[in-house]
Image 1 (cartoon, rainbow, N blue to C red):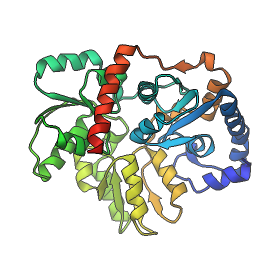
Image 2: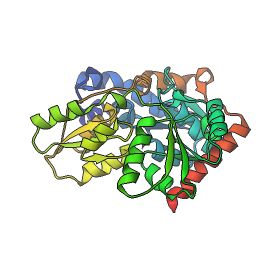
Image 3: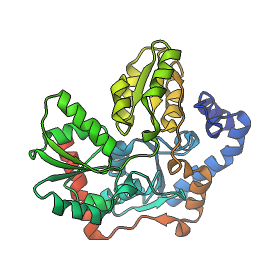
Image 4: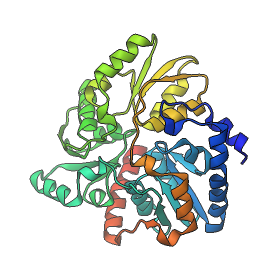
Length: 338
């Protein structure tokens, strides 16, 4: 790759943050890192999985697979390389290890947590099971392996409605995202589906900041605006949105809209950057809210991970937890395919 090729990929990205604006000079500075990473991948028999929320230069410069949590969990099962460098957060690396246990899974970023995943633990799920016997326990994929190991089925933002509505049991405990859970309850009521759903109080600190006033302001300034939000946002935001869906579903919705349509994306601004690259003839305006955990991934720490894998953060799971968590994820694949 040359600096000019890299610049041509990145130059359209202007989501509003200095972190994600690109000049030819900046691309020339990044290029040696990118080229060394791509060479080391071959030497180390490694691939890089990158979530859509990490910096654009990672996705467009070094990633072998990119996408949302569900897509990357599927990609993890297909990897033939010996090592997976997961440019995201720890719970995603754990999912890769659960599904492909023979691989060495490395996490490059220094901030590997997640405000949502860290809002509940395995022991807390066990306590809830005692409180709500006879309930089916559904966990969002944004959870630790220990939480998945104590739940019955896992869901993503793209398949939560399909899976929960198809469960035989009408008594559900949904963890950990209370906002997504309330959006699920509201949507099920609209569709005439009656289930008793107990919610936890976790949330994503990025998505919970968006509110209805923000939407009303941008609509007043931009005629024809399409507001696209993630189901981790407040129900009031979902109500005012033109479309609510997972990262992958947002991309498909945007793809289907005519050129020139202005969009306000209410999610982590990494997707905003990706959309500006993929759809340069469409207009993306407004909010840029960054996840400190995802943005702690960088070319520098990916390179350091590949240079010195012995010093990197390796994802390790005890086999009992892995098997129990895999059963939960396999249940998701089963219900999602029905």
